[in-house]
Length: 326
Image 1 (cartoon, rainbow, N blue to C red):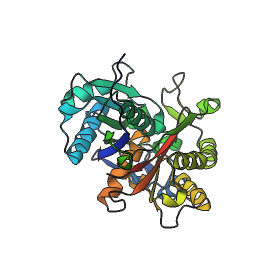
Image 2 (cartoon, one colour):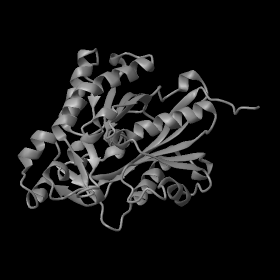
Image 3 (tube, helix red, strand yellow):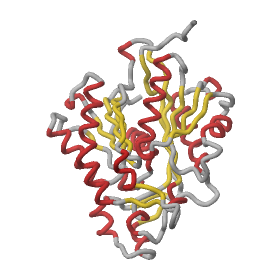
């Protein structure tokens, strides 16, 4: 039996993202539910979010983000080996998003599948892609996190309509031929199925997304920092080596709590911390790659920076890894 040639590891070659044009501000939501700007900012840190129109589908956004990542890398989609779409908001489970995304990008016939780990989905998919490349199953994998959460929100539910939004973010992942080029560290992942009811769709009632906000907050502010520290250790680094922290953009208070705990364990005071949620809302699996793309465009993260990614969400599922910014 002959096995394919393995690679030393994987690295990110390009990134991209897309958001809908429509901006929904806190003032807009005040007209619909009993809330106001100060209440929303104090609890989740969001000022505005982007919502797609009815004609824009989840695969549409995934394709645009994928195109942006391929363009950033200067890579021909015909050379792809696989397309992975991390999502939990397809309107129907069949067919998947990935096959149609691959074909519409010009990569028809490649391996293509969806991965549902909710808000941890991008980090899960990035880990899968890196392992595929390291094992020799693929050389170039396009990883996309895409969500159209607006389809699953009860816009009269103050606990969710203020938080969630639509977007897609993508990364092209390719081989590192020598150890020094490796730019995606080992994934630290897991699940907490005892708490599966904390974030879920309620098919028996509204068929809309429901979450126990305070319980999720307590879990995230307790459980996520150890996951992040484990990802750093698996990469053979220390917290002081991290230049940029990009946690899932779930809640600004959660993001700040994670950063505070990492600094207690040796992360630098000048470590840059993503706050994309302020103007993008919680976009689930799209939030991490989109935040990386936005931060690079703004000059807050530079090529070669050591970036810690950590996603967490429904399941409960969590995953994180250290990457090098392309």
